Image (cartoon, rainbow over all chains, first blue to last red; front, side, top):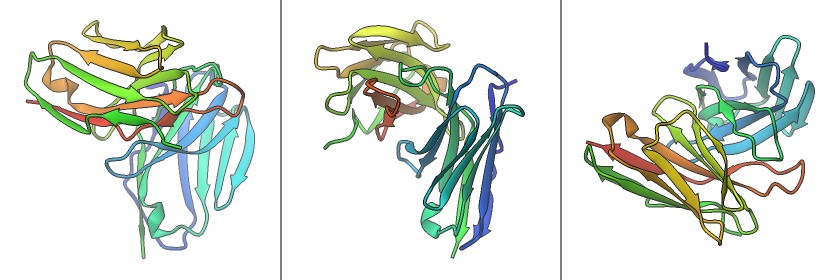
Amino acid sequence: QKEVEQDPGPLSVPEGAIVSLNCTYSNSAFQYFMWYRQYSRKGPELLMYTYSSGNKEDGRFTAQVDKSSKYISLFIRDSQPSDSATYLCATSTIYNQGGKLIFGQGTELSVKP
Amino acid sequence: DAGVTQSPTHLIKTRGQHVTLRCSPISGHKSVSWYQQVLGQGPQFIFQYYEKEERGRGNFPDRFSARQFPNYSSELNVNALLLGDSALYLCASQGLRGSTDTQYFGPGTRLTVL
């Protein structure tokens, strides 16, 4: 069993839709949770990070962590064609001491105009 | 400010050869991590270096090695290349100076092994 599971998609939505991306994880020691966006042939770009359980909002993006069910989510409101990319969830046990990131497989998102 | 830079952008090698990939972190960042991303998969952790010392190693064979220089740039070396080493190799730098620090990724080096 992988430490972080993520549905690879692909996921296709119309412009303006609300997108829900999800991951599950198995290790209860994970404390930090991140979402990265990766455009084709580019490096991952950090979108959101949260510590422990709770919600965090940044513009059209909301990250949600439920440690009791080991479930993390990213919501994108009013999706745009420019949001078309692969979204990677990532976790780690130690954040500011350089702990390694454990990534999900990535979900490929396509937003159609 | 320049972000994380990596060189070369693309590389084609044949089985059995050796390859060296290079990374320059964001100015002021002292930590560099290396990841391997196979097509269709998430990045997998290979190494982390901080202040020129290895701080972490992923589940990769000894053919993979790395080092960090006094200016905090880093090299990843892979010996005896296999077809399965074909991947995007990502470098990430981190400042490690506070809770807001995060890992910033470079554009990657795409390695093709024939």
